[in-house]
Image 1: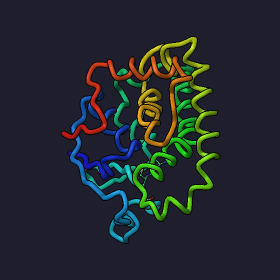
Image 2: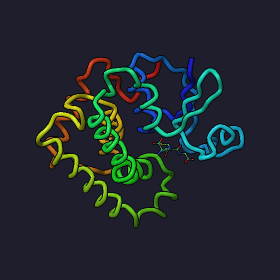
Image 3: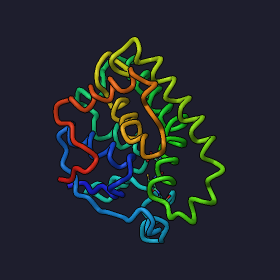
Length: 204
Ligand SMILES: N[C@@H](CCC(=O)N[C@@H](CS)C(=O)NCC(=O)O)C(=O)O
Protein backbone atom coordinates (compact mmCIF):
# COMPACT_ATOMS: atom_id res chain seq x y z
CA UNK A 1 0.00 0.00 0.00
CA UNK A 2 1.37 3.51 -0.77
CA UNK A 3 2.43 5.54 2.26
CA UNK A 4 1.43 9.17 2.71
CA UNK A 5 4.07 11.00 4.73
CA UNK A 6 2.06 13.73 6.34
CA UNK A 7 1.23 16.15 9.13
CA UNK A 8 -2.34 15.45 10.08
CA UNK A 9 -3.47 19.05 10.69
CA UNK A 10 -1.94 20.28 7.43
CA UNK A 11 -4.42 21.34 4.75
CA UNK A 12 -1.96 20.26 2.04
CA UNK A 13 -1.99 16.75 3.53
CA UNK A 14 -5.77 16.80 4.00
CA UNK A 15 -6.21 17.48 0.26
CA UNK A 16 -4.38 14.21 -0.44
CA UNK A 17 -6.42 12.15 2.08
CA UNK A 18 -9.68 13.58 0.70
CA UNK A 19 -8.68 12.91 -2.90
CA UNK A 20 -7.45 9.38 -2.15
CA UNK A 21 -10.67 8.58 -0.33
CA UNK A 22 -12.83 9.85 -3.21
CA UNK A 23 -10.66 8.13 -5.83
CA UNK A 24 -10.96 4.86 -3.89
CA UNK A 25 -7.26 4.56 -2.99
CA UNK A 26 -6.31 3.44 0.54
CA UNK A 27 -3.12 4.94 1.98
CA UNK A 28 -1.00 4.10 5.00
CA UNK A 29 -0.21 7.23 7.00
CA UNK A 30 3.25 8.09 8.32
CA UNK A 31 2.82 11.05 10.67
CA UNK A 32 5.22 13.87 11.44
CA UNK A 33 4.77 16.54 14.11
CA UNK A 34 4.08 20.02 12.80
CA UNK A 35 6.84 21.57 14.93
CA UNK A 36 9.28 18.66 15.30
CA UNK A 37 11.52 19.41 12.32
CA UNK A 38 11.76 15.73 11.34
CA UNK A 39 11.16 16.46 7.64
CA UNK A 40 14.41 18.46 7.70
CA UNK A 41 16.49 15.52 8.93
CA UNK A 42 18.66 13.36 6.63
CA UNK A 43 16.32 10.32 6.57
CA UNK A 44 13.46 12.37 5.18
CA UNK A 45 15.62 14.65 3.00
CA UNK A 46 16.91 11.53 1.23
CA UNK A 47 13.34 11.00 0.01
CA UNK A 48 12.35 14.64 -0.53
CA UNK A 49 15.23 17.15 -0.60
CA UNK A 50 12.65 19.93 -0.21
CA UNK A 51 11.95 18.75 3.34
CA UNK A 52 8.18 19.05 3.19
CA UNK A 53 5.05 16.94 3.35
CA UNK A 54 2.78 15.72 1.86
CA UNK A 55 4.92 13.13 0.14
CA UNK A 56 3.56 9.93 -1.36
CA UNK A 57 5.86 6.89 -1.22
CA UNK A 58 4.94 4.05 -3.54
CA UNK A 59 5.54 0.36 -2.81
CA UNK A 60 8.53 0.38 -5.18
CA UNK A 61 10.19 3.24 -3.28
CA UNK A 62 9.41 6.10 -5.67
CA UNK A 63 8.56 9.30 -3.80
CA UNK A 64 6.29 12.09 -5.00
CA UNK A 65 6.07 15.38 -3.05
CA UNK A 66 3.83 18.41 -3.80
CA UNK A 67 0.12 18.12 -3.03
CA UNK A 68 -0.99 19.07 -6.55
CA UNK A 69 1.20 16.41 -8.18
CA UNK A 70 -0.06 13.80 -5.71
CA UNK A 71 -3.71 14.74 -6.40
CA UNK A 72 -3.02 14.32 -10.12
CA UNK A 73 -1.38 10.91 -9.59
CA UNK A 74 -4.11 9.56 -7.31
CA UNK A 75 -7.05 10.86 -9.35
CA UNK A 76 -5.77 9.91 -12.82
CA UNK A 77 -8.43 7.79 -14.55
CA UNK A 78 -11.18 8.81 -12.12
CA UNK A 79 -14.03 11.31 -12.66
CA UNK A 80 -12.05 13.78 -10.53
CA UNK A 81 -9.97 14.62 -13.64
CA UNK A 82 -11.84 15.50 -16.85
CA UNK A 83 -10.86 14.06 -20.24
CA UNK A 84 -11.31 17.27 -22.21
CA UNK A 85 -8.04 19.07 -22.98
CA UNK A 86 -9.35 22.56 -22.18
CA UNK A 87 -11.08 21.42 -18.99
CA UNK A 88 -7.86 19.78 -17.79
CA UNK A 89 -5.92 22.98 -18.48
CA UNK A 90 -8.51 25.05 -16.57
CA UNK A 91 -8.28 22.65 -13.68
CA UNK A 92 -4.51 23.10 -13.59
CA UNK A 93 -4.96 26.87 -13.83
CA UNK A 94 -6.84 26.83 -10.53
CA UNK A 95 -4.38 24.42 -8.92
CA UNK A 96 -1.47 26.72 -9.83
CA UNK A 97 -3.52 29.69 -8.58
CA UNK A 98 -3.99 27.86 -5.30
CA UNK A 99 -0.26 27.30 -4.89
CA UNK A 100 0.89 30.79 -5.88
CA UNK A 101 -1.90 33.19 -4.87
CA UNK A 102 -3.87 31.42 -2.11
CA UNK A 103 -1.87 28.88 -0.07
CA UNK A 104 1.12 31.18 0.63
CA UNK A 105 -1.22 33.57 2.48
CA UNK A 106 -4.28 31.63 3.67
CA UNK A 107 -2.33 28.54 4.78
CA UNK A 108 0.62 30.49 6.14
CA UNK A 109 -1.66 32.72 8.26
CA UNK A 110 -3.35 29.56 9.60
CA UNK A 111 -0.02 27.98 10.56
CA UNK A 112 1.32 31.01 12.37
CA UNK A 113 -1.90 32.13 14.06
CA UNK A 114 -3.17 28.69 15.07
CA UNK A 115 -0.18 26.38 15.50
CA UNK A 116 3.10 28.30 15.92
CA UNK A 117 4.57 28.91 19.38
CA UNK A 118 3.44 32.39 20.53
CA UNK A 119 7.02 33.70 20.84
CA UNK A 120 7.73 32.74 17.22
CA UNK A 121 4.39 34.15 16.09
CA UNK A 122 5.23 37.48 17.73
CA UNK A 123 8.18 37.81 15.33
CA UNK A 124 5.81 37.37 12.38
CA UNK A 125 3.03 39.65 13.63
CA UNK A 126 4.03 42.44 11.22
CA UNK A 127 3.29 40.10 8.27
CA UNK A 128 -0.33 39.42 9.23
CA UNK A 129 -1.80 42.42 7.35
CA UNK A 130 -0.04 41.35 4.15
CA UNK A 131 -1.17 37.71 4.52
CA UNK A 132 -4.72 38.92 5.03
CA UNK A 133 -4.66 41.43 2.15
CA UNK A 134 -3.30 38.87 -0.30
CA UNK A 135 -5.45 36.04 1.04
CA UNK A 136 -8.61 38.14 0.74
CA UNK A 137 -7.56 39.07 -2.80
CA UNK A 138 -7.40 35.35 -3.67
CA UNK A 139 -10.77 34.75 -2.01
CA UNK A 140 -12.14 37.63 -4.10
CA UNK A 141 -10.98 35.98 -7.30
CA UNK A 142 -12.67 32.75 -6.20
CA UNK A 143 -15.87 34.62 -5.28
CA UNK A 144 -16.02 36.26 -8.70
CA UNK A 145 -15.60 32.89 -10.45
CA UNK A 146 -18.09 31.03 -8.25
CA UNK A 147 -20.73 33.75 -8.51
CA UNK A 148 -21.46 32.37 -11.98
CA UNK A 149 -20.42 28.71 -11.67
CA UNK A 150 -20.76 25.83 -9.23
CA UNK A 151 -17.21 24.47 -9.71
CA UNK A 152 -13.76 25.71 -10.69
CA UNK A 153 -13.33 23.73 -13.90
CA UNK A 154 -15.08 21.32 -16.27
CA UNK A 155 -18.52 22.20 -14.87
CA UNK A 156 -18.09 19.58 -12.19
CA UNK A 157 -16.20 18.62 -9.03
CA UNK A 158 -12.50 18.03 -9.83
CA UNK A 159 -9.17 18.00 -8.03
CA UNK A 160 -9.08 21.79 -8.48
CA UNK A 161 -11.96 21.95 -5.99
CA UNK A 162 -10.12 19.61 -3.63
CA UNK A 163 -6.94 21.69 -3.88
CA UNK A 164 -8.77 24.94 -3.07
CA UNK A 165 -10.99 23.38 -0.40
CA UNK A 166 -8.03 22.32 1.77
CA UNK A 167 -7.26 25.78 3.11
CA UNK A 168 -10.43 27.71 2.21
CA UNK A 169 -12.61 25.60 4.50
CA UNK A 170 -10.18 26.25 7.37
CA UNK A 171 -9.48 29.91 6.52
CA UNK A 172 -11.05 31.08 9.80
CA UNK A 173 -8.06 29.49 11.61
CA UNK A 174 -5.91 32.13 9.93
CA UNK A 175 -8.22 34.98 10.92
CA UNK A 176 -10.16 35.17 7.64
CA UNK A 177 -13.87 35.98 7.75
CA UNK A 178 -15.82 34.49 4.82
CA UNK A 179 -19.01 36.44 5.61
CA UNK A 180 -18.49 38.67 2.58
CA UNK A 181 -17.91 35.70 0.26
CA UNK A 182 -21.34 34.03 -0.15
CA UNK A 183 -20.48 32.20 -3.37
CA UNK A 184 -17.35 30.75 -1.74
CA UNK A 185 -19.40 29.63 1.27
CA UNK A 186 -22.02 28.00 -0.98
CA UNK A 187 -19.22 26.20 -2.87
CA UNK A 188 -17.71 24.98 0.43
CA UNK A 189 -21.09 23.43 1.26
CA UNK A 190 -21.29 21.79 -2.19
CA UNK A 191 -17.82 20.30 -1.76
CA UNK A 192 -18.70 18.98 1.70
CA UNK A 193 -21.82 17.33 0.23
CA UNK A 194 -19.88 15.35 -2.41
CA UNK A 195 -20.06 11.54 -2.19
CA UNK A 196 -17.19 10.15 -0.13
CA UNK A 197 -16.34 13.50 1.44
CA UNK A 198 -14.34 13.19 4.64
CA UNK A 199 -13.42 15.90 7.15
CA UNK A 200 -9.85 16.92 7.94
CA UNK A 201 -9.80 14.61 10.96
CA UNK A 202 -10.31 11.53 8.74
CA UNK A 203 -7.85 8.62 8.96
CA UNK A 204 -8.12 5.19 7.36
N1 LIG B 1 3.72 23.26 -2.14
C1 LIG B 1 3.75 22.22 -1.16
C2 LIG B 1 3.78 22.84 0.23
C3 LIG B 1 4.14 21.80 1.28
C4 LIG B 1 4.30 22.41 2.67
O1 LIG B 1 4.43 23.64 2.84
N2 LIG B 1 4.30 21.53 3.67
C5 LIG B 1 4.43 21.93 5.04
C6 LIG B 1 3.23 21.40 5.83
S1 LIG B 1 1.73 22.06 5.17
C7 LIG B 1 5.67 21.32 5.64
O2 LIG B 1 6.05 20.21 5.29
N3 LIG B 1 6.32 22.03 6.57
C8 LIG B 1 7.47 21.52 7.26
C9 LIG B 1 8.73 22.25 6.89
O3 LIG B 1 8.69 23.13 6.01
O4 LIG B 1 9.74 21.93 7.50
C10 LIG B 1 2.53 21.31 -1.33
O5 LIG B 1 1.49 21.78 -1.82
O6 LIG B 1 2.61 20.12 -1.02
